[in-house]
Length: 99
Image: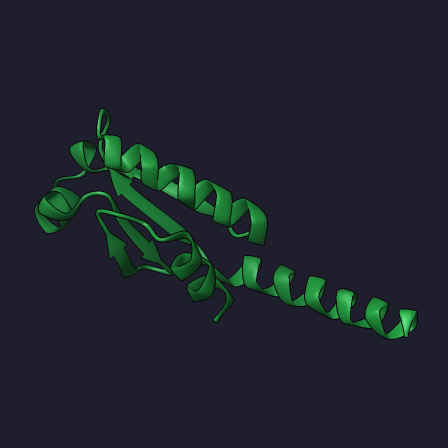
């Protein structure tokens, strides 16, 4: 029984490593935005737990992002596709990254 648990744990670790190499979370926000700070906390936690890389983009430094997302910040993209905006739900983001 212990051997089977060990095999399953190794398979889970391999699956988590696979997820982290194939995924990218992008947080789009602006300095001084309290919702952006809250979103960053969730993104940092979930990505650290799953080993998924993430990046932060400042909407005030990119005219195209500003035009597209100004009324929605913070915005979270998963692999370049919009996942959510305003409030980031930890469990929903976790599920999206495991899918």
